[in-house]
Image 1 (cartoon, rainbow, N blue to C red):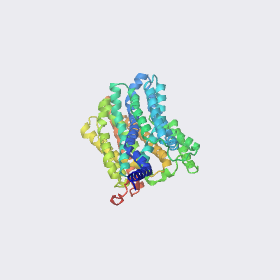
Image 2 (image 1 turned 90 degrees about the vertical axis):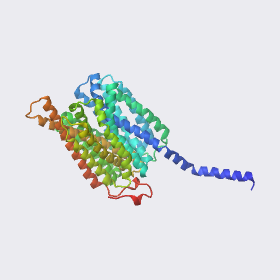
Image 3 (image 1 turned 45 degrees about the vertical axis):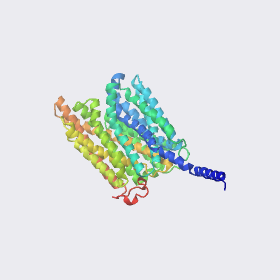
Length: 512
């Protein structure tokens, strides 16, 4: 064979080799972008997490600027949570049908536009409407982002690490929002608590367009379950509204009882329909899995307990100890720092070697211990001897709970169910937060009122009553964490799900 023929033959073999490996190379290219994709998803999640708390700090300033009443103030929060909580499941299914990239980009761009318009609000109705539109696009954004993460990191140590970081962002972002809200309000304007979302949404949308594959998920294009959509959206709306109404009208009011009852009936009807229709909005196979079910319940109880703690600890720091908004945010800062460290480093290492039956309940017990330490507060409690230790212990516990639960809540779902499974995760967070804040707020208010019975209404006694109410809430929050520990240790399986391990690790894991 001549030299030229040899060269041509070698070139031909090289060409064939390139042709043969091109699918693998394409997959490798996608894999090489996976950590950038995590950055995009994390930025989107951070925006949602921040928005849950950053606006709370800015409310008094917004009220003064737009001249609305204290009674109307709650609607700035409620309008967002109603739209967000009631539309999550249908948005998750749309992500499965229309493509996660498409829904994620729509959510990011829509959220940015609603934030820009809301920041320019000139009256109360303008701001409330924009908050509702923010909630609508957040409902598109949240399940699509988690579904992208679920399908990008499918198993092993990388999945554990990615979901640990995601869980840390989900919880840590809420506490960072307290600091950011204080800084923006004090040094710029309350309007920047809306404008800041644009800073996050634009690069996240650009990253999603550039990094995510354009091809939609391999899912059925069957028609959306209209009866299921109507019942679950109506049911979730009624449940969230009912609990949001508790702080204003109490548990026994006609509005509260009526909405909660209607919500319960509609959700029961939804579950019944899902078992009978051919193309359910939420296939029951997503819920009945023991591992995922334990993850959902863990998130439900931990979120309810956690948000109540954030609320009353923030009030205690500002109203009793006299902290400014910025100083309050700085006081919270150790909690997300510890949480991120645990969720991003310790949690992923444990989740591949220790059963969730151990990590989630232990995290719940540490959460209970952290909140229990807060029951020692008084009118003159010091930050370092009383508050800091509780935040560190609570951060460790929440890091374990959220890094593990967020991973197992979407583990092993079919590709066509990734969006709705992610939406279910976000839904239980939203409902858990609504229930927890409503219940704990009512218990604290009742305890405060009872403390003042028979006492003179002096400034000192009023402060003592407030602290008594906060302590009561912390005791009940401790109980919620303990219930979470009991429920998860009973429900979660003792084995370690295969999807949390890398191939070849089966012999090195520890079962409990």
